[in-house]
Amino acid sequence: EPEVTQTPSHQVTQMGQEVILRCVPISNHLYFYWYRQILGQKVEFLVSFYNNEISEKSEIFDDQFSVERPDGSNFTLKIRSTKLEDSAMYFCASRRQSSQETQYFGPGTRLLVL
Amino acid sequence: GESVGLHLPTLSVQEGDNSIINCAYSNSASDYFIWYKQESGKGPQFIIDIRSNMDKRQGQRVTVLLNKTVKHLSLQIAATQPGDSAVYFCAEKDGATNKLIFGTGTLLAVQP
Image (tube, rainbow over all chains, first blue to last red; front, side, top):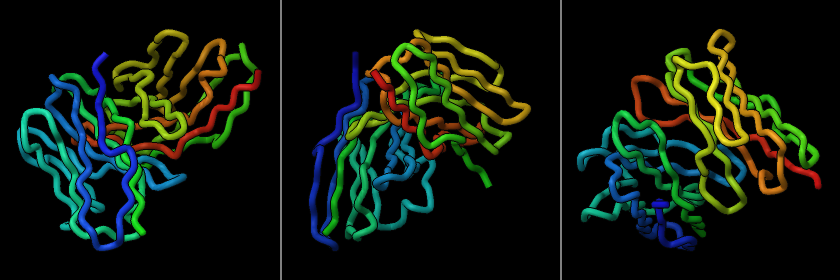
């Protein structure tokens, strides 16, 4: 069964450094998402992406964040200058088409900012 | 504002019993609801979903009930197994957006 994959599984970085989190959505899916989950808290929406552009973003997704689909398979989340409060699990999700609502999640990347 | 919350933060059941996990939501404009299971260190795993034009949907060992009158969603798991132990999240989608809004989660602990 096709799955969303994410790399790396864990990332440790120094405050102020840039990180890129990578995702490979399910191959025939058209809608892509990033969510984050701070330890012990609920999953929060960051951004949605469709047709090579951001379709929606939350207030969390400020100028330090960007997303890109550099080729036909990868979907990346970049944090330009990480802050301590960016430490969280970051989940990528994808959805097939507008008539199919279900979002399928990857295993996540655990980001720790020191 | 919109919010999704859970009545019970933890639920402990005996193996073989039925489990019921509840969720309250406040956004009347939500048109789609979904239950996810999250095991430790893993991403949310789809369990079952339901659209707002339905009030019940059944899957394998799971049933989701939607009561739009009181804005309540529940997940029923039949014959609960140790492998069902996880955190269960409900999530809603507003009809005007693509994003999912998650509840705080309920920890289901299955006792052998």
